[in-house]
Image 1 (tube, rainbow, N blue to C red):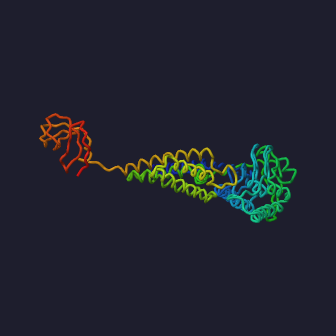
Image 2: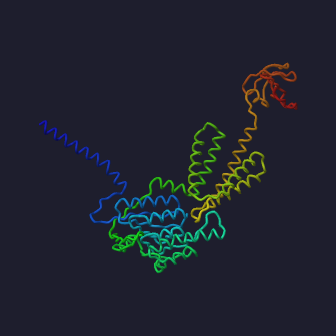
Length: 453
């Protein structure tokens, strides 16, 4: 009986441990979306690029390619819809695609999507370039972030970008001349035109149709090796952005960066005027650091930074000396132009929204001037406590003043001296004091107010 009971106890212990292990593992599997893969079913990883081309999106793509290369996927499908972006980030993304160990399929979709500017370079770098009907690609002319350079410098940059594009378009057996036209003259192509010009390989209405069409197709990798795609009936695993990617993607928005910068500046100013509150100062510092971090990821014009500094100086001068609003208006104008031109973005989607810049400038300017004026007036006003605070207050004689006696002022009994004898109950005005003895005059008397000694 004891052995039998022991076997039962051991059995229940095994069941309990197995259940506990299942409870620990199952949520993780569900969170990742892991599902058992039927034998022989191919897997295609999918990455959605529907943002501007900048350091954050470049990091996301690098992570997606690294994930696809390590999890046994047959290919990586990049669904793209982008207006373009920064050249350096685009070069890094192209290099990652060319170095991928598994084939990379770039699909411009769904209908209405585009692969503009830097997106066109990424499309042409793919092992398989595809577009959905109703999409466009091209307009890849180089846009200079910090103003138009001289003719020689402009030609050097454009020739460098064209040579970079040709270097891999030719290896992909695509039309290098048509690709160069998209860069030289900002020409854009519809999906059908791109297919006719041999800039892409497939036009497909949807993702599942694209994978079915590509099944069995042999592609030549950038290193010259040939690979056959197995994508029919493939399970598509979405490579989701991490919390870090979501946070950085939110921060890299220039409008968010400006809001953090302005809000942090106001909170820090509040901390200086109300010392010891701690929370505004700590929160403001955090917001300023986040704004600086975000702006560091974006191309910044230093002339715009000078305008922002000039705006702060003008607002300080307005609050201190009072320029009848002229200095404040000049400061708000400098602030507005500084915010509008702060980010030297190659595409409009990466620039500061004009309405947001104007609203922030006006609100920040008005609030800052008002706060500074209040602070200056408070510092200029002399502190009045004790007897000083009673000057000008009304009082009542508690006894005949001849001329010294006791008076009642603001509920307190004080010793006072009058300039003339006064009866009890006479209404009085405090005009000064000698240490702890108040000087009073009859209420309504025209004597000038004396200063305290």
